[in-house]
Image (cartoon, rainbow, N blue to C red; front, side):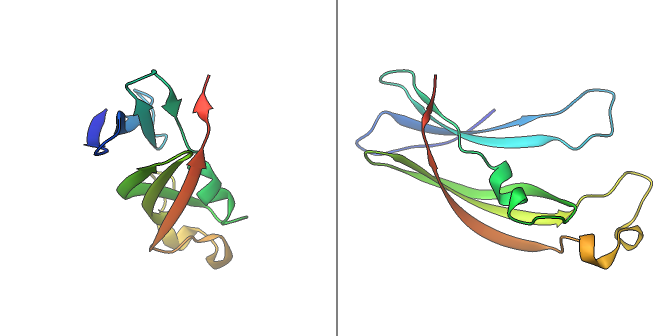
Length: 116
C-alpha cells in the first residue's frame, strides 16, 4: 500500500494498493482507494470499468497518476496506461491486431460510493 496524499481541509486519505498471486504468472491488480479517517469509510472506484470500455480487446493497465476531489460525493481521478495483456511466453505479435490494446494513457473520473 502506498499513501498518495491527504486532501486539505478534509479527513480523506488517498492510497494505491497492489495485489498479486505468489507463485503465479498472473498479472497483478492495482486499486486506488480514498479513506475517510473521520468515519472509516472506504471509497473504492471500479477501475475495471476502464478495461470494460475497451470491449473485446486484451488489455491491462497500470495506474500512473491519481488524485481526488472530496466534495459531497468522492470523485477519484485516475490516469492509467493501457497495454496489451500477453502471457509470459508470448509477444504482442502473437495477439491479433483487433485484440491489441495499444499503448495509450487515458484519464478517468470515477465517482465512488463507500464500501460497507
